[in-house]
Length: 346
Image (cartoon, rainbow, N blue to C red):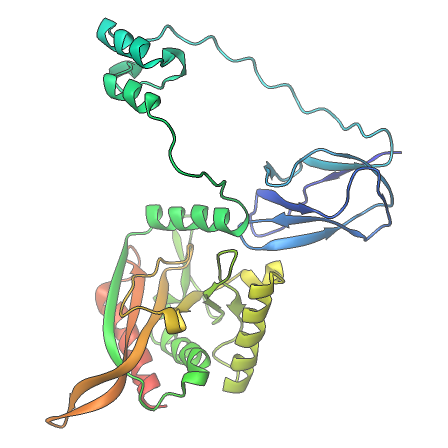
């Protein structure tokens, strides 16, 4: 009897997944729980084991394709056939092309089929600009966005579209901060400061602001595949050495592509620091559906005034980018100054 394996619900509201890599091929005999396929979601890449034993008789979705939850991906056993999806409705005959005689003449000269051109003029009328754009040859090498890069593209597009973000920035004196423990120290300072400005430790859900009483902070990690944000749990209660060990573990797992789905879920706030690649200042995007992100930028020796004298200190900029729909500038500044104050006391 054939077993139809469907794309499972991977949790946290995910409705689709991308076939990152098949771990089997047609004709291969597999056992139950053998590695079957890697599925990329907007959170991470997950290896799915086979729920049944038998011979892989048909693979129905190719690598790189994005399909909704419930789609039959592979047939194990049987003759390789799967239940056919409902037939798509027949397309409605296209309306007559709308274009002036001059535009038609130009299209003929340029070899453009007006039936393939989408009109941008009134009522869908095809303009001369539309025709000339269609006649312009493609330039450069095209690469399809897939995997982490595709998910990052979609996620950041949504964040930029939906969140009216504002960024506050101030200098911080890092002279007495141990740079080897920079990220754990920042996580601890952020967690304690969020208790003073709770509206930044929140999520926007269904038009409501959900204030959270846990401090699970995401740390942006740049990998060869793209940007991922694993979550460090309980930053307010964990000891500094525990935070350091967890940050290192998550960073290594991110670089190796071994992060589990639950390690990328449920963050309440995000911290980003580009380390040696950090610029003097950048404006991070808020990690939707969170409402704030703190950035630590390039730290270097600078001449500053202390007690009326010019001295050399290790200085860096700290930024707070926030969703202005739910947090005002004064509160964001209060939070940023609280973080800086705690760092400068270390």
